[in-house]
Each structure stands twice: as structure tokens, then as C-alpha cells.
Amino acid sequence: MPQSPIQERLEDAIVHNSPAEIDAALRAGASLTGERCWPLKRAVEFDALASMNHLLSIGHTMRAEWPQLDYCSREDMRETALHEAAFLNRPAMVRRLLEADGKHFINVAGPEFTAVPLALAAMVGAVEIVNILLAAGADVNARNADYAGETALDYAVKCDRLDIASKLLAAGADPDIPTWAWMSARDHSHMPKTNPAIRALIATMPFKSHRLHDGRWSTPPKAPDDTV
Image (cartoon, rainbow, N blue to C red):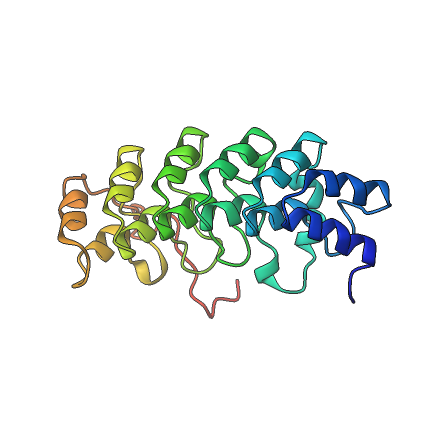
């Protein structure tokens, strides 16, 4: 179902980075929480920082638009503005969202990549955002919500992000957390195509077993065909 003309006017104002037009659309009856409307996420997608700042200044939040995102039929539409900002490497937006209510979502795994913002930043090599998120209290060992259960360090290793791997390890990242097929970041570092510098860096970290005394894993990841 298409948006109403007034909602389209609001979205155009956000995309074109026009606070004055945003206000005009709202006065004309547009809603910041209307159907298929997620203003902050749209501002991030189109790098419209002025729109984002204005929306936050008039009291709009990510939590206010989350109900619409949560019920989208397509998972790729359901990432929050914070997840989008981390993945698109927009540091100023990440800072601004965290100042508002971004900390509510800082350790939430989004539905599209099933990853937390820190992992998305590690994936794309967004060093500044990694620093921002860690300083804001992001869980350095937060895991994906899918069967793989990967951490930000897993992405840093597999995506050849030496600088990010170093920062994560310094912040307490555990290279021995098992993911699907029991592969840890340390295991990934021994793959043939892995940067030798990353392998050497992880080798300096003491090994930490995640097995219990009876041999079971403490936090076993789920396989794709798990039904439990």
C-alpha cells in the first residue's frame, strides 16, 4: 500500500535534509510514527544529518519508530538507524543516536545481518565507530542472534581488519568463543587466507576453554537445522 501524499512529503523532506520542510509536513498532518515511516533510519540511509538532528531535537527517537520496523514484512527493512549508521560508516550519526536513545539498541542484534552495531562496524572496517561504540559501553563479546553466533572479532578476523581486531582484543574480546561448527576467531585466524599479522596478534592471547568439566560447550551455537 503506497504512502499518503502527506507522508510522502515528510519522507522527501527528510531525504533532502530540510528541517523546515519536515516541520511544514508535520503541520500539514504528517506523522513521524505513521505506517511504513521510520524517519531516523531514512535520515541515515540518505546521509541527512541535518534531518536527523532536527528529528531528535523535536523529541523523535528510535524507540518511537521501532514498532513500525519490528512489524515490517521484509527483514532487510527492519534494522534500526543505529545499525544502519554503523554499517554505512557514519560516525557523526552514531554519536548523535547514542546521545539520544541509541544505547537502548547498542547490544541488540538486528534482523537483517543478525548482528549488533559493533559487529557491523567491524565488518565494514569502520574504526572510528568501533571506538565510539566501545566507549559507549558496547559488549565486545556480543554474539549474532543467528545460528552462527559470531562476534565482532570473528568479523574483524574474516574481513582482514587488523586495526579493529587489535582494538577489540585490547577491549577484552575473547578469541575463543565458539561459533557454528565450533569455529572461534582463533580458529578462523589459522585459515590459509587470513592475514598473518592477525594470526600473530591472536596467538599472543592466552587460550580460554569454553568447555565445561563434562566436555560440553558452555554456550553451544545452533546449527541451521536445529529445531530447539
